[in-house]
Amino acid sequence: MARKKIALIGAGNIGGTLAHLAAQKELGDIVLFDIAEGIPQGKALDLSQCGPVQGFDAAVTGTNDYKDIEGADVIIVTAGVPRKPGMSRDDLLGINLKVMKAVGEGIKQYAPDAFVICITNPLDAMVWALREFSGLPHNKVVGMAGVLDSARFSTFLAWEFGVSVRDVTSFVLGGHGDTMVPVVEYSTVKGIPVPDLIKMGKSTQERIDAIVKRTANGGGEVVGLLKTGSAFYAPAASAIAMAESYLGDQKRVLPCAAYLEGQYGVDGLYVGVPVKIGKDGVEEVIEIELNDQAKAGLQVSIDAVKDLLTACKGIDNTLA
Ligand code: APR
Image (cartoon, rainbow, N blue to C red):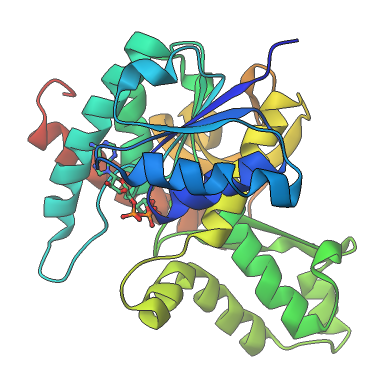
């Protein structure tokens, strides 16, 4: 059987980490694409030279030509710019929207059968725009947010309860940003819901509320420490988990920004919800019962995503 092909659009911090993880796991041969000349080629050469040391056998190449992504099975998109001081949210939206247009057209031309995972921010708008520009089926284009947000939530819960992260499951819904909704009721330690753990005296509501807040600000906390960039190890690991579920038809249930057509009362938007990922991409959107507080939180999140899409349509009238 031919090896799978993984194309990484954007060879920056996340792109480089994605390439390393994908090579270590031998998910397939890897093509790193970037508009910056030399960066994808240099990273590819460096990563290739990890192979003999680490014992992996994946071909890693770098390119500035979309033609080289031809026939990719999985594409992970991190191309774009981060928000810089003095830049408004709309400035960022305008710049990254243009990037999504170029990337979407490249995918449409060379890899229309790929499973595409978008990471570029603002995520919920960029994944929607990327889908529009690429014309791929909605079930083959998803956004990476919930796996990362719930990984952050799980990390903090594991620290709070003094247990292995392996035994913590947590749930985060909604948009990727301040309006995300960490759902405490569906977050457990080995199946024991967090509210029960509070009743058992293992934590307090105040401490869990603080963890929920810290989770929602998870990206900002890392930026505050790094000062010159944003998180890249956990975002890359999260997207790789999604890619593996697709490539291996694992049918994992993962929170992702997925296209909703009526589920959760939403139509025509990408919102973070639990989905099943297998060989057909997003095979199912899983609708869970939410309490009133989570419903209200999700609605705020949905409204924020709608505002972003309105702004996108204002910037690029081919999207309207
Ligand atoms: N086509 C391809 N690559 C591009 C384009 C484009 N049109 N525009 C920019 N790039 C490349 C840059 O050259 C850079 O190498 O995208 C890369 C982005 O890398 P970093 O700046 O290191 O950003 P990173 O930390 O990897 O994050 C990427 O993910 O989490 C989000 O907010 C984050 O949107 C950002 C993205």
